Length: 523
Image (cartoon, rainbow, N blue to C red; front, top):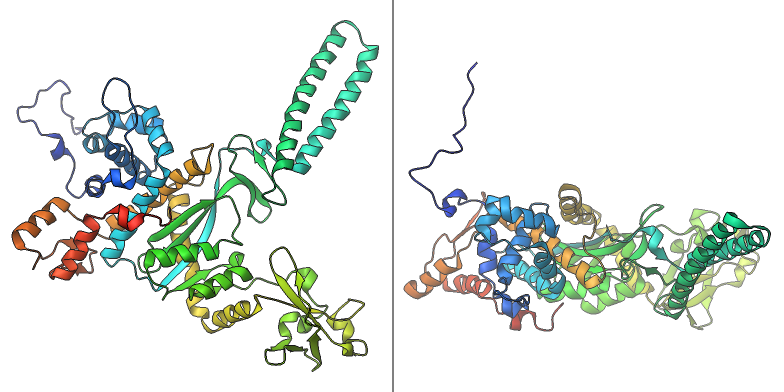
């Protein structure tokens, strides 16, 4: 049987082709090249890496390499170094430059804020191409595992267990040493020295935890100090970071991200402020899940005049009545009289005293009718009768509950919006962990490149193409009027930039000045 035959490896070609001919015109690597070339990286905050002897690498080349790597599921600096030697697309992109893995890794480590600004720039591009609607956004978070094992994460209880175990072992070995001799005694002395060394280490960690007053239950991670032991889902826990993101509904483009080591309870207000600044409007609706249901955050949303739809969590067991009919949410509040009416028609009043918790103040409402109520055993088990608490944020919580009830179909869009980027990043690309360590700022650079790669992939798939050099030449020769068919947004719709206003808008993103657009904002 005859087979197709390959070319002779020693055969010389009469007609050679240049490197540019080996990369198709519709390849995403050309899009990356055009995107980075349109940015003034010095104004974005990138600085050339110091080098000895020969000139440093251009930050643009290293940024191109990282964007290409993240868009193709490669984050390791050593893997990217290999691609510089064997991958034709990377060779074309870097013009045959071959930086070593240390140079590549240092670039990511030392430019977290500049990478954040490049992400903002991708959002500006999407806005100027009308790819962001700005009317409906959804926010959520995902956990990204840190480079720190559970074994090397400590809290006060864990340290106390370790110290108690070591002290018991030291007592045990000391008693055994009194009766031992020869090799056995030497082995016991070695064990005692080892336990004393560990005791010293854990005592130092205990002192650091006691000195940490930033939270009620401080933690210490030895490999990645800023990472925290958190619940991932159900009873599964990991030492990880929390990536907060905001997604626009029109094309599922990420408009914002922030890497934290906290849970979702206090995150919504911060993300809404950032979204308002990015979109330059507050005329949008924000969708969040029940993890963001916090009174103070609803107050922040009200102050920002932003409409939110946040899922209502179930009532905790401790707050439930013996019969669901008599749960606190079934008591009707009258704002004029500042009273509650229970399902049996009794009025609950307050003595106007305000009680304080760590996060909010509240008032208590009760009635003397509880003593002789025939259904008291269905309403409460408390000896002094039913007590209803109303926090200072109750009006905002009730307003959200009303909006959710009136917009059930709209809220159902939330999961489809927020899970699309996570499905791409974590399931498709395998980015379910942070590859860097030591600081949250360095981890944020990794997260920034993930989200930047996702946005650029979306823009490329939507058909965005731009050539800044050609546009500038057209401006000089054509005086900024009637420039047709610069960009195709998708296979279904073509945007023709034909009028001066839209042309100037296009040029605005092409020559974006980071000093005016980004200074003091969301860094």
